[in-house]
Amino acid sequence: MRASRLLSLLLLLQSRGRMTAQELADELEVSVRTVYRDVEALGASGVPVYADRGPAGGYQLVDGYRTRLTGLTSEEADSLFLTGMPGPAAELGLGAVVAATQLKVLAALPPELRSRAGRVRERFHLDAPGWFRGNEGTPRVAAIAEAVWQQRRLRIRYVRWAQVEVERTVDPLGLVLKAGTWYLVARTDDLRTYRVSRVVELTRLDEPFDRPEGFDLAEYWAGWSERFEQRMYPMRVTVRLTPNGLRSAQVLLGLVPARELRDVEPEGEWTTVRVPVESLDHAVVDLLRLGPEVEVVEPPELRERVIARIAAMADVYQR
Image (cartoon, rainbow, N blue to C red):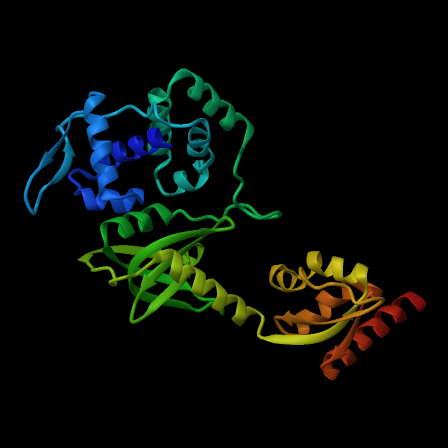
């Protein structure tokens, strides 16, 4: 336990430079007294760490000192190579950088961990897109990523869902990869999300911008995703499902309905549930996929439309 903490302390000083004892204690979740003892232990083991006194002082390493990554555990070494995403990295223009970084990390590892990391790459692979779809054509991702990184405004021409083109000047705040699809989070008058594959033209402007204070990309995306799902499934319908229908619905009705049905326990021969749907038109098509394992209860309009569709199908086969 202490050896791991000493390594963490060393890497903190290496990556951040001068840090006070209190800052180190907060990062390591130990007391300041423990930090004093750990710094003494590092010094005794030959690590060139020294202290500056005074209000602006703190601990730091001698300039130029770097440690090799020999303190990694086998699990930590494995995790470095499980996080690799060569496809998305290449789209961002970072494929060569990622490859070079992995080579440097491999060179720094001791032989036993280097061999283990190589086996991880041979045995595990990340395929981000969903089934029956490939990566979207996103030739502009690298240019957008550069603007995000350098905080430069973009002028984009964008195709909205109704196939209407609009032009926007935006502050690009971040990129999100969701199930093989890239999204740009940007600020105009407010925060908006753009599907990158629908950006048909972009111009990088030589205008810097300041990021919103306190903006958190992951937090924004979580909230936006929830609101997006609610917009996509604005209606709820009541149906009765057999136990087999309940199981099938979790596969055939889409991710949002499936998530809500996952924890429903069968109540006997039939279970009554409320199911989110995109529209009555979508509901007719989706529910008919469950065949005799489902009965629509309400709304009456949906029930009537399902009955009419079943009658029309029966008529075709009774000719």
